Image (cartoon, rainbow, N blue to C red; front, side):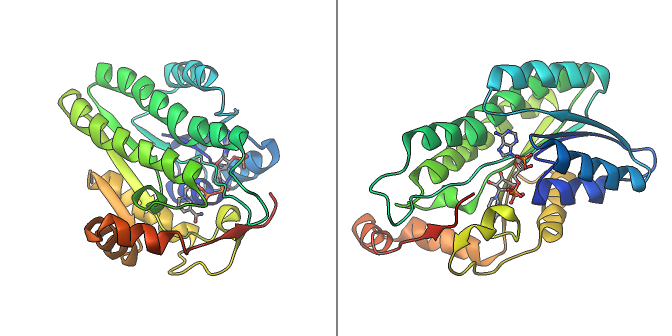
Length: 252
Ligand SMILES: NC(=O)c1ccc[n+]([C@@H]2O[C@H](COP(=O)([O-])OP(=O)(O)OC[C@H]3O[C@@H](n4cnc5c(N)ncnc54)[C@H](OP(=O)(O)O)[C@@H]3O)[C@@H](O)[C@H]2O)c1
């Protein structure tokens, strides 16, 4: 099993839920200390743990790393959880172009490429499961987070297309779309985080999506309702509502 973003909130919770005697975990993260903390906690549960420090903004390096890790430890399940969020601060006129680029690479381009790299290897062994962690931000036009929402919308469309393409090869693809989860990422938000869930709760949703081979899991449930409302609201009304919504964040 390979988990990206294992040094962070949801990825760490996932690693800990899977950690057990006889289980091999390949954990990826960028921050060495946080990654080793996760690895140590998983080893306490007597899992066999391998780690890799990697910056997913470098997609080509990530593809090479996945092939190397899967060669050494064939992975039947890959959870692409790492992600980055950002929004326009109220003091700024536009989102930062460099950050919009990084969001596209880390949240969309690299996980999409890693999905195909993993699928290529899984199909040769008869199949496997891949979960892509997106966001409910994919389903709404967020004027203060076009870069984040756009990257997650791209991931959502990629996941639903790849699911159809890879099913005949025995590779199951699931998209996970969380609302607010209480991790370092959402703690940067200034203002309310409605329907907040714990990272452990999020991890349980992800595990059951994989076990049940679900195409898409949106949680908690009020975000499923919001998505439907958004879908059936006429564009002029939607734009009028969304243009009145603002948000802010604390520095990283
Ligand atoms: N928290 C929420 O409210 C929420 C809501 C919807 C969706 N999500 C999604 O859930 C996923 C996990 O987020 P989280 O809440 O657990 O946030 P988090 O605690 O900030 O963890 C993010 C993880 O992604 C890794 N990461 C970020 N940029 C990276 C890069 N360039 N290269 C490699 N790894 C990188 C981080 O690694 P380092 O710490 O080692 O840098 C960390 O392990 C993300 O895809 C996020 O978009 C979260």
